[in-house]
Length: 197
Image (tube, rainbow, N blue to C red; front, side, top):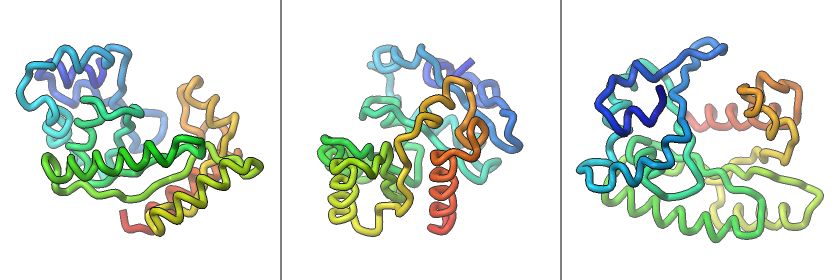
């Protein structure tokens, strides 16, 4: 069972939440079936609130619920943004990053206005950073110039270990806990906690 079941049936969310090897960390997995959800729910009322409604049954049992979104503004992301109170926006240090970020900010404003007034941007995290390239340095500089203190100080590096970890079904902090990638994500977590999350 996966997140797909929550979108397409009235099953209990507890049926699709699984414990992990990390104490107090649970997972509600996605699946390849999610690619058809938008079409399957095309004519359904309230389709943008399915995830929020499902999570409301368990949210008091968790300190944090993190929702990982695809890099698009389709129905799955709309559901996540309807359910969220804060958004952490990852931005790759690549050529079109700022254009995509500007479009996302506009979309978040529309969602806040029409669907979820509680939605706020917690911050922007720069990823795939390579300090050896002028492009990475330029994206960091421009993003910080445009968004100021909304941009986290931690830069997530382009790192082979980060790329490998998902194929082993492990977070970077378990797969390669001494790697630059694990260190960067640990620093980001500390920054988030310092924000009062």
